[in-house]
Image (cartoon, rainbow, N blue to C red; front, side, top):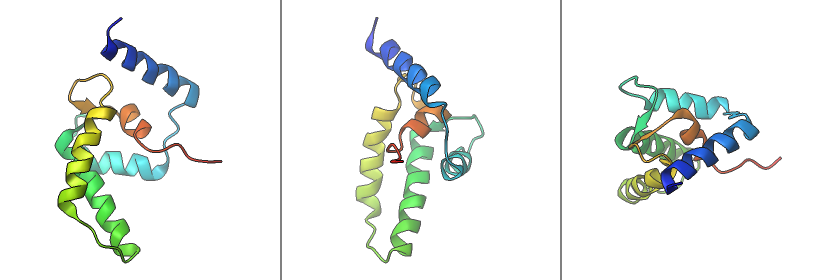
Length: 103
């Protein structure tokens, strides 16, 4: 079994166990990020949605925001979240990219 197939399998198993329970915030981010309407996020869409969210959070919390650094970090993170290696994040991959919530 190759690594990509194993990664997809892990995402599916985790997703089924977790029920892919996305928050309204995550669902809204995905919908806003899917600029071309293909029900997935390419790297540019992913980086754009993360930049927008980061800017908003920085403004709200009166923090500095370095767009170049954040864009580079998110572009690198995209590859880790694209578990099937197809160059796009499905909704499930996108939702799994968020840190686990503590109960």
